[in-house]
Image 1: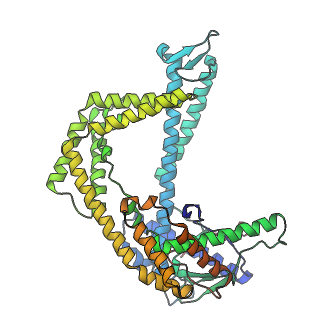
Image 2: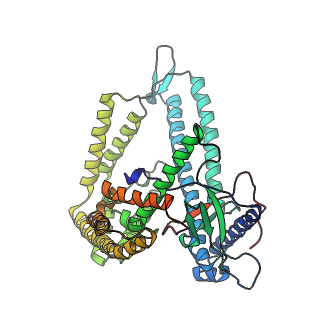
Image 3: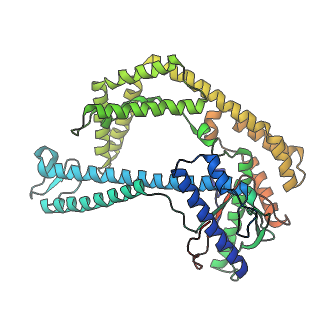
Length: 478
Protein backbone atom coordinates (compact mmCIF):
# COMPACT_ATOMS: atom_id res chain seq x y z
CA UNK A 1 0.00 0.00 0.00
CA UNK A 2 2.85 2.43 0.78
CA UNK A 3 4.10 2.10 -2.78
CA UNK A 4 0.90 3.78 -3.93
CA UNK A 5 1.33 6.82 -1.65
CA UNK A 6 2.25 10.23 -3.03
CA UNK A 7 5.92 10.97 -2.40
CA UNK A 8 5.57 14.57 -3.58
CA UNK A 9 2.84 17.16 -3.30
CA UNK A 10 2.35 20.28 -5.39
CA UNK A 11 0.38 23.11 -3.81
CA UNK A 12 -0.15 26.70 -4.86
CA UNK A 13 0.99 29.61 -2.71
CA UNK A 14 -1.16 32.75 -2.45
CA UNK A 15 1.27 35.48 -1.35
CA UNK A 16 0.44 39.15 -1.02
CA UNK A 17 2.16 41.69 -3.31
CA UNK A 18 4.66 42.48 -0.58
CA UNK A 19 5.37 38.77 -0.05
CA UNK A 20 5.86 38.35 -3.81
CA UNK A 21 8.76 40.82 -3.64
CA UNK A 22 10.35 38.91 -0.77
CA UNK A 23 9.94 35.60 -2.60
CA UNK A 24 11.42 37.05 -5.80
CA UNK A 25 14.44 38.22 -3.79
CA UNK A 26 14.72 34.72 -2.28
CA UNK A 27 14.84 33.19 -5.76
CA UNK A 28 17.52 35.64 -6.91
CA UNK A 29 19.63 35.24 -3.78
CA UNK A 30 19.44 31.44 -3.82
CA UNK A 31 20.39 31.23 -7.51
CA UNK A 32 23.36 33.51 -6.82
CA UNK A 33 24.53 31.36 -3.91
CA UNK A 34 24.16 28.13 -5.91
CA UNK A 35 26.11 29.56 -8.84
CA UNK A 36 28.88 30.77 -6.53
CA UNK A 37 29.07 27.35 -4.87
CA UNK A 38 29.35 25.70 -8.27
CA UNK A 39 32.07 28.13 -9.37
CA UNK A 40 34.12 27.55 -6.21
CA UNK A 41 33.58 23.78 -6.51
CA UNK A 42 35.06 23.77 -10.04
CA UNK A 43 37.97 25.83 -8.75
CA UNK A 44 38.78 22.82 -6.49
CA UNK A 45 38.16 24.76 -3.29
CA UNK A 46 37.65 22.72 -0.13
CA UNK A 47 34.16 22.18 1.26
CA UNK A 48 34.93 24.02 4.49
CA UNK A 49 36.42 26.97 2.60
CA UNK A 50 33.29 27.24 0.44
CA UNK A 51 31.04 27.12 3.51
CA UNK A 52 33.13 29.85 5.13
CA UNK A 53 32.80 32.13 2.08
CA UNK A 54 29.05 31.56 1.69
CA UNK A 55 28.15 31.79 5.37
CA UNK A 56 25.58 34.52 6.16
CA UNK A 57 26.78 38.04 6.86
CA UNK A 58 24.67 39.29 9.75
CA UNK A 59 25.83 42.93 9.54
CA UNK A 60 24.00 43.69 6.29
CA UNK A 61 20.52 44.66 5.21
CA UNK A 62 20.62 42.27 2.24
CA UNK A 63 18.61 39.04 2.62
CA UNK A 64 20.75 36.28 4.10
CA UNK A 65 19.92 32.58 4.36
CA UNK A 66 20.72 30.80 7.60
CA UNK A 67 23.90 28.75 8.00
CA UNK A 68 21.91 25.49 8.24
CA UNK A 69 19.91 26.27 5.10
CA UNK A 70 23.07 27.13 3.12
CA UNK A 71 25.16 24.19 4.35
CA UNK A 72 22.43 21.58 3.93
CA UNK A 73 20.70 22.56 0.69
CA UNK A 74 23.19 24.31 -1.64
CA UNK A 75 25.32 21.19 -2.03
CA UNK A 76 22.28 18.93 -2.51
CA UNK A 77 20.66 21.32 -5.03
CA UNK A 78 23.88 21.35 -7.06
CA UNK A 79 24.14 17.57 -6.76
CA UNK A 80 20.52 17.22 -7.96
CA UNK A 81 21.24 19.27 -11.08
CA UNK A 82 24.52 17.41 -11.76
CA UNK A 83 22.67 14.11 -11.37
CA UNK A 84 19.94 15.27 -13.76
CA UNK A 85 22.55 16.27 -16.35
CA UNK A 86 24.35 12.92 -16.00
CA UNK A 87 21.07 11.05 -16.40
CA UNK A 88 20.25 13.12 -19.46
CA UNK A 89 23.72 12.36 -20.89
CA UNK A 90 23.26 8.64 -20.20
CA UNK A 91 19.84 8.72 -21.86
CA UNK A 92 21.21 10.51 -24.92
CA UNK A 93 24.12 8.05 -25.15
CA UNK A 94 21.70 5.11 -25.07
CA UNK A 95 19.59 6.74 -27.77
CA UNK A 96 22.73 7.41 -29.83
CA UNK A 97 23.85 3.79 -29.50
CA UNK A 98 20.47 2.52 -30.73
CA UNK A 99 20.48 4.94 -33.67
CA UNK A 100 24.01 3.90 -34.65
CA UNK A 101 23.12 0.21 -34.38
CA UNK A 102 20.03 0.71 -36.59
CA UNK A 103 22.05 2.75 -39.08
CA UNK A 104 24.79 0.09 -39.31
CA UNK A 105 22.25 -2.72 -39.70
CA UNK A 106 20.54 -0.93 -42.60
CA UNK A 107 23.90 -0.05 -44.20
CA UNK A 108 24.97 -3.71 -43.99
CA UNK A 109 21.69 -4.77 -45.66
CA UNK A 110 22.35 -2.37 -48.55
CA UNK A 111 26.02 -3.25 -49.06
CA UNK A 112 26.29 -6.92 -48.05
CA UNK A 113 24.37 -9.77 -49.69
CA UNK A 114 24.46 -12.01 -46.61
CA UNK A 115 22.88 -9.32 -44.39
CA UNK A 116 19.63 -8.80 -46.31
CA UNK A 117 16.49 -10.61 -47.45
CA UNK A 118 14.80 -9.94 -50.80
CA UNK A 119 11.15 -10.41 -51.86
CA UNK A 120 9.84 -11.29 -55.34
CA UNK A 121 9.58 -7.58 -56.27
CA UNK A 122 13.23 -6.93 -55.56
CA UNK A 123 12.58 -5.03 -52.32
CA UNK A 124 14.94 -5.69 -49.44
CA UNK A 125 15.04 -5.68 -45.67
CA UNK A 126 17.71 -6.39 -43.03
CA UNK A 127 17.72 -10.03 -41.95
CA UNK A 128 15.04 -10.76 -39.37
CA UNK A 129 13.20 -7.44 -39.88
CA UNK A 130 9.52 -7.29 -40.76
CA UNK A 131 8.89 -4.95 -43.73
CA UNK A 132 10.43 -4.92 -47.24
CA UNK A 133 11.21 -1.58 -48.93
CA UNK A 134 13.00 -0.28 -52.02
CA UNK A 135 16.68 0.63 -51.90
CA UNK A 136 15.82 4.35 -52.03
CA UNK A 137 13.71 4.05 -48.86
CA UNK A 138 16.61 2.51 -46.93
CA UNK A 139 19.10 5.10 -48.24
CA UNK A 140 16.77 7.92 -47.17
CA UNK A 141 16.44 6.22 -43.79
CA UNK A 142 20.25 6.26 -43.42
CA UNK A 143 20.30 10.01 -44.20
CA UNK A 144 17.61 10.59 -41.60
CA UNK A 145 19.51 8.51 -39.03
CA UNK A 146 22.76 10.37 -39.78
CA UNK A 147 20.97 13.65 -39.08
CA UNK A 148 19.60 12.29 -35.77
CA UNK A 149 23.01 10.88 -34.77
CA UNK A 150 24.68 14.28 -35.32
CA UNK A 151 21.99 15.98 -33.24
CA UNK A 152 22.37 13.52 -30.35
CA UNK A 153 26.15 13.84 -30.45
CA UNK A 154 25.92 17.66 -30.32
CA UNK A 155 23.68 17.43 -27.26
CA UNK A 156 26.10 15.03 -25.52
CA UNK A 157 29.06 17.33 -26.30
CA UNK A 158 27.19 20.31 -24.82
CA UNK A 159 26.44 18.39 -21.62
CA UNK A 160 30.10 17.33 -21.28
CA UNK A 161 31.41 20.86 -21.80
CA UNK A 162 28.70 22.77 -19.98
CA UNK A 163 28.92 24.07 -16.44
CA UNK A 164 25.88 24.25 -14.21
CA UNK A 165 24.00 27.53 -14.19
CA UNK A 166 21.08 28.13 -11.83
CA UNK A 167 18.28 30.44 -12.83
CA UNK A 168 16.18 32.21 -10.15
CA UNK A 169 13.37 29.69 -10.54
CA UNK A 170 13.67 27.41 -7.50
CA UNK A 171 14.54 27.36 -3.82
CA UNK A 172 15.08 24.13 -1.95
CA UNK A 173 14.25 24.42 1.75
CA UNK A 174 15.77 22.19 4.41
CA UNK A 175 13.24 20.38 6.59
CA UNK A 176 13.93 22.68 9.57
CA UNK A 177 13.44 25.80 7.40
CA UNK A 178 9.66 25.57 7.15
CA UNK A 179 6.52 24.59 9.01
CA UNK A 180 3.09 23.87 7.57
CA UNK A 181 -0.49 23.73 8.78
CA UNK A 182 -3.14 22.23 6.51
CA UNK A 183 -6.10 23.19 8.72
CA UNK A 184 -4.87 26.77 8.99
CA UNK A 185 -3.73 26.70 5.31
CA UNK A 186 -0.42 28.29 6.29
CA UNK A 187 3.19 27.79 5.28
CA UNK A 188 5.82 29.36 7.51
CA UNK A 189 9.15 29.95 5.77
CA UNK A 190 12.09 30.43 8.15
CA UNK A 191 15.34 29.94 6.22
CA UNK A 192 16.65 33.42 7.10
CA UNK A 193 19.80 34.18 9.09
CA UNK A 194 18.20 36.88 11.26
CA UNK A 195 15.44 34.56 12.49
CA UNK A 196 12.66 36.28 10.50
CA UNK A 197 9.69 34.22 9.34
CA UNK A 198 7.42 34.60 6.33
CA UNK A 199 3.85 33.32 6.71
CA UNK A 200 2.29 32.54 3.32
CA UNK A 201 -1.20 31.23 2.65
CA UNK A 202 -1.40 27.94 0.78
CA UNK A 203 -4.28 26.86 -1.46
CA UNK A 204 -5.45 23.35 -0.52
CA UNK A 205 -8.82 23.35 -2.33
CA UNK A 206 -9.99 24.82 -5.68
CA UNK A 207 -11.15 28.43 -5.44
CA UNK A 208 -14.17 27.77 -7.70
CA UNK A 209 -17.50 26.49 -6.29
CA UNK A 210 -17.13 22.81 -5.47
CA UNK A 211 -19.23 21.09 -8.08
CA UNK A 212 -18.47 19.06 -11.19
CA UNK A 213 -14.77 19.08 -12.10
CA UNK A 214 -14.01 21.50 -9.25
CA UNK A 215 -15.48 19.02 -6.75
CA UNK A 216 -13.40 16.21 -8.26
CA UNK A 217 -10.29 18.41 -7.97
CA UNK A 218 -11.11 19.11 -4.32
CA UNK A 219 -11.48 15.40 -3.59
CA UNK A 220 -8.22 14.64 -5.44
CA UNK A 221 -6.32 17.30 -3.44
CA UNK A 222 -7.69 15.98 -0.15
CA UNK A 223 -6.58 12.45 -1.04
CA UNK A 224 -3.18 13.73 -2.22
CA UNK A 225 -2.53 15.70 1.00
CA UNK A 226 -3.52 12.72 3.15
CA UNK A 227 -1.33 10.41 1.06
CA UNK A 228 1.61 12.83 1.23
CA UNK A 229 1.38 13.22 5.01
CA UNK A 230 1.07 9.45 5.45
CA UNK A 231 4.24 8.94 3.45
CA UNK A 232 6.00 11.75 5.32
CA UNK A 233 5.13 10.15 8.69
CA UNK A 234 6.35 6.81 7.38
CA UNK A 235 9.74 8.23 6.27
CA UNK A 236 10.24 9.57 9.80
CA UNK A 237 10.62 5.95 10.95
CA UNK A 238 11.72 4.05 7.85
CA UNK A 239 13.12 6.68 5.47
CA UNK A 240 16.75 6.48 4.38
CA UNK A 241 19.00 9.54 4.24
CA UNK A 242 21.05 10.31 1.12
CA UNK A 243 24.14 8.66 2.63
CA UNK A 244 22.17 5.65 3.96
CA UNK A 245 20.26 4.55 0.86
CA UNK A 246 23.38 3.64 -1.19
CA UNK A 247 24.53 1.24 1.55
CA UNK A 248 21.17 -0.51 1.99
CA UNK A 249 20.48 -0.67 -1.76
CA UNK A 250 23.96 -1.95 -2.63
CA UNK A 251 24.42 -5.55 -3.69
CA UNK A 252 27.71 -7.09 -4.82
CA UNK A 253 27.17 -8.34 -8.38
CA UNK A 254 30.09 -10.66 -9.02
CA UNK A 255 29.33 -10.99 -12.74
CA UNK A 256 30.46 -7.37 -13.17
CA UNK A 257 33.92 -8.95 -13.37
CA UNK A 258 33.09 -10.45 -16.78
CA UNK A 259 34.54 -8.40 -19.69
CA UNK A 260 32.10 -6.60 -21.98
CA UNK A 261 32.01 -7.20 -25.74
CA UNK A 262 33.50 -3.78 -26.60
CA UNK A 263 36.31 -4.36 -24.11
CA UNK A 264 37.32 -7.85 -25.21
CA UNK A 265 36.49 -7.85 -28.94
CA UNK A 266 36.99 -4.30 -30.18
CA UNK A 267 36.07 -4.00 -33.87
CA UNK A 268 37.74 -0.63 -34.31
CA UNK A 269 41.34 -0.13 -35.31
CA UNK A 270 42.17 0.89 -31.76
CA UNK A 271 44.76 -1.34 -30.14
CA UNK A 272 43.46 -4.30 -28.16
CA UNK A 273 45.10 -2.78 -25.08
CA UNK A 274 42.44 -0.03 -25.06
CA UNK A 275 39.77 -2.58 -24.18
CA UNK A 276 41.97 -4.03 -21.43
CA UNK A 277 42.47 -0.53 -20.00
CA UNK A 278 38.70 -0.04 -19.85
CA UNK A 279 38.26 -3.46 -18.25
CA UNK A 280 40.96 -2.71 -15.64
CA UNK A 281 39.26 0.60 -14.87
CA UNK A 282 35.88 -1.08 -14.40
CA UNK A 283 37.34 -3.74 -12.08
CA UNK A 284 39.00 -1.01 -10.01
CA UNK A 285 35.63 0.75 -9.72
CA UNK A 286 34.13 -2.59 -8.63
CA UNK A 287 36.76 -2.90 -5.88
CA UNK A 288 36.34 0.76 -4.83
CA UNK A 289 32.56 0.37 -4.53
CA UNK A 290 32.96 -2.72 -2.33
CA UNK A 291 35.51 -1.00 -0.06
CA UNK A 292 33.29 2.06 0.28
CA UNK A 293 30.25 -0.01 1.30
CA UNK A 294 32.01 -2.35 3.76
CA UNK A 295 33.96 0.57 5.25
CA UNK A 296 37.48 -0.85 4.88
CA UNK A 297 40.20 -1.68 2.36
CA UNK A 298 40.24 -5.20 0.95
CA UNK A 299 43.06 -7.27 2.37
CA UNK A 300 45.88 -8.73 0.27
CA UNK A 301 44.24 -12.15 -0.20
CA UNK A 302 40.92 -10.62 -1.31
CA UNK A 303 42.61 -8.25 -3.75
CA UNK A 304 44.73 -11.05 -5.20
CA UNK A 305 41.66 -13.25 -5.66
CA UNK A 306 39.85 -10.51 -7.62
CA UNK A 307 42.89 -9.64 -9.76
CA UNK A 308 43.55 -13.32 -10.46
CA UNK A 309 39.93 -13.71 -11.58
CA UNK A 310 40.25 -10.63 -13.77
CA UNK A 311 43.25 -12.11 -15.59
CA UNK A 312 41.56 -15.52 -15.96
CA UNK A 313 38.28 -14.12 -17.36
CA UNK A 314 40.08 -11.89 -19.87
CA UNK A 315 41.43 -14.98 -21.66
CA UNK A 316 38.15 -16.92 -21.77
CA UNK A 317 37.71 -16.07 -25.47
CA UNK A 318 35.59 -19.06 -26.47
CA UNK A 319 33.15 -18.79 -23.57
CA UNK A 320 32.84 -15.01 -23.92
CA UNK A 321 32.12 -15.26 -27.67
CA UNK A 322 29.35 -17.79 -26.99
CA UNK A 323 27.76 -15.41 -24.46
CA UNK A 324 28.04 -12.39 -26.76
CA UNK A 325 26.61 -14.39 -29.70
CA UNK A 326 23.62 -15.28 -27.56
CA UNK A 327 23.17 -11.61 -26.62
CA UNK A 328 23.20 -10.74 -30.33
CA UNK A 329 20.56 -13.39 -31.08
CA UNK A 330 18.38 -12.07 -28.24
CA UNK A 331 18.60 -8.49 -29.54
CA UNK A 332 17.78 -9.61 -33.09
CA UNK A 333 14.74 -11.57 -31.87
CA UNK A 334 13.50 -8.63 -29.80
CA UNK A 335 13.40 -6.45 -32.93
CA UNK A 336 10.93 -8.85 -34.55
CA UNK A 337 7.19 -9.26 -33.99
CA UNK A 338 7.23 -11.80 -31.20
CA UNK A 339 5.13 -14.95 -31.31
CA UNK A 340 4.89 -17.26 -28.30
CA UNK A 341 7.61 -19.45 -29.82
CA UNK A 342 9.93 -16.43 -30.24
CA UNK A 343 9.33 -15.32 -26.64
CA UNK A 344 10.10 -18.84 -25.42
CA UNK A 345 13.28 -18.82 -27.49
CA UNK A 346 14.33 -15.50 -25.96
CA UNK A 347 13.65 -16.80 -22.42
CA UNK A 348 15.69 -19.92 -23.12
CA UNK A 349 18.59 -17.88 -24.51
CA UNK A 350 18.51 -15.49 -21.54
CA UNK A 351 18.55 -18.43 -19.10
CA UNK A 352 21.45 -19.92 -21.05
CA UNK A 353 23.36 -16.62 -20.85
CA UNK A 354 22.81 -16.36 -17.09
CA UNK A 355 23.99 -19.93 -16.59
CA UNK A 356 27.11 -19.43 -18.73
CA UNK A 357 28.00 -16.13 -17.02
CA UNK A 358 27.71 -17.74 -13.61
CA UNK A 359 29.69 -20.77 -14.79
CA UNK A 360 32.58 -18.53 -15.89
CA UNK A 361 33.36 -17.51 -12.31
CA UNK A 362 35.88 -19.63 -10.37
CA UNK A 363 35.09 -21.23 -7.02
CA UNK A 364 37.93 -19.34 -5.30
CA UNK A 365 36.61 -15.97 -6.47
CA UNK A 366 33.02 -16.93 -5.61
CA UNK A 367 34.03 -17.87 -2.04
CA UNK A 368 35.93 -14.59 -1.63
CA UNK A 369 32.89 -12.56 -2.69
CA UNK A 370 30.55 -14.62 -0.46
CA UNK A 371 32.67 -13.78 2.61
CA UNK A 372 32.57 -10.08 1.71
CA UNK A 373 28.78 -10.32 1.23
CA UNK A 374 28.43 -11.70 4.77
CA UNK A 375 30.43 -8.72 6.08
CA UNK A 376 28.26 -6.31 4.09
CA UNK A 377 25.11 -7.91 5.49
CA UNK A 378 26.45 -7.54 9.04
CA UNK A 379 27.08 -3.83 8.39
CA UNK A 380 23.51 -3.39 7.14
CA UNK A 381 22.20 -5.23 10.23
CA UNK A 382 24.19 -2.94 12.54
CA UNK A 383 22.78 0.10 10.73
CA UNK A 384 19.18 -1.12 11.09
CA UNK A 385 19.68 -1.98 14.78
CA UNK A 386 20.86 1.58 15.47
CA UNK A 387 17.89 2.91 13.49
CA UNK A 388 15.47 0.73 15.47
CA UNK A 389 17.01 1.84 18.78
CA UNK A 390 15.94 5.42 17.94
CA UNK A 391 12.28 4.43 17.55
CA UNK A 392 11.30 5.30 21.19
CA UNK A 393 12.53 8.89 20.68
CA UNK A 394 10.68 9.14 17.36
CA UNK A 395 7.51 7.79 18.98
CA UNK A 396 7.84 10.44 21.71
CA UNK A 397 8.15 13.15 19.05
CA UNK A 398 5.09 11.76 17.30
CA UNK A 399 3.14 12.01 20.57
CA UNK A 400 4.04 15.71 20.79
CA UNK A 401 2.68 16.22 17.27
CA UNK A 402 -0.36 13.99 17.49
CA UNK A 403 -1.58 13.12 20.99
CA UNK A 404 -0.76 10.53 23.63
CA UNK A 405 -0.47 7.21 21.85
CA UNK A 406 -1.87 4.07 23.43
CA UNK A 407 0.46 1.19 24.21
CA UNK A 408 -1.16 -0.81 21.38
CA UNK A 409 -0.45 2.01 18.91
CA UNK A 410 3.17 2.17 20.02
CA UNK A 411 3.45 -1.60 19.56
CA UNK A 412 2.18 -1.26 15.98
CA UNK A 413 5.22 0.90 15.11
CA UNK A 414 7.72 -1.14 17.13
CA UNK A 415 6.54 -4.49 15.73
CA UNK A 416 6.60 -3.12 12.17
CA UNK A 417 10.17 -1.93 12.65
CA UNK A 418 11.25 -5.27 14.07
CA UNK A 419 9.82 -7.13 11.06
CA UNK A 420 10.98 -4.63 8.40
CA UNK A 421 14.58 -4.54 9.70
CA UNK A 422 14.88 -8.29 10.36
CA UNK A 423 16.22 -9.07 6.85
CA UNK A 424 18.42 -6.16 5.66
CA UNK A 425 18.85 -7.45 2.10
CA UNK A 426 15.07 -7.67 1.68
CA UNK A 427 14.18 -4.31 3.25
CA UNK A 428 13.32 -2.67 -0.08
CA UNK A 429 10.89 -5.51 -0.87
CA UNK A 430 9.23 -5.52 2.54
CA UNK A 431 5.43 -5.06 2.44
CA UNK A 432 4.23 -2.92 5.33
CA UNK A 433 1.09 -4.17 7.06
CA UNK A 434 -2.37 -2.68 6.57
CA UNK A 435 -2.58 -2.12 10.33
CA UNK A 436 0.52 0.09 10.26
CA UNK A 437 -0.57 2.05 7.16
CA UNK A 438 -4.10 2.59 8.53
CA UNK A 439 -2.59 3.91 11.77
CA UNK A 440 -0.50 6.47 9.86
CA UNK A 441 -3.55 7.51 7.83
CA UNK A 442 -5.49 8.23 11.03
CA UNK A 443 -2.68 10.56 12.17
CA UNK A 444 -2.61 12.23 8.73
CA UNK A 445 -6.37 12.90 8.93
CA UNK A 446 -5.91 14.44 12.36
CA UNK A 447 -3.18 16.77 11.05
CA UNK A 448 -5.37 17.85 8.13
CA UNK A 449 -8.69 18.41 9.86
CA UNK A 450 -8.02 18.93 13.59
CA UNK A 451 -4.44 20.00 14.31
CA UNK A 452 -4.33 23.75 14.96
CA UNK A 453 -1.34 25.93 14.06
CA UNK A 454 1.70 24.78 12.10
CA UNK A 455 4.17 21.94 12.54
CA UNK A 456 7.38 20.65 11.00
CA UNK A 457 7.51 17.64 8.70
CA UNK A 458 10.65 15.93 9.90
CA UNK A 459 13.23 14.82 7.30
CA UNK A 460 11.13 16.11 4.42
CA UNK A 461 12.73 19.00 2.48
CA UNK A 462 10.56 20.95 0.04
CA UNK A 463 11.18 22.74 -3.22
CA UNK A 464 9.12 25.69 -4.35
CA UNK A 465 9.11 27.58 -7.62
CA UNK A 466 7.71 30.91 -8.81
CA UNK A 467 4.38 30.99 -10.58
CA UNK A 468 4.56 30.89 -14.39
CA UNK A 469 2.38 33.99 -14.41
CA UNK A 470 5.05 36.01 -12.60
CA UNK A 471 8.42 35.87 -14.28
CA UNK A 472 11.20 36.46 -11.73
CA UNK A 473 13.64 39.34 -12.32
CA UNK A 474 17.04 38.82 -13.87
CA UNK A 475 19.82 37.21 -11.88
CA UNK A 476 21.35 39.46 -9.23
CA UNK A 477 24.67 39.07 -7.49
CA UNK A 478 24.87 37.56 -4.01
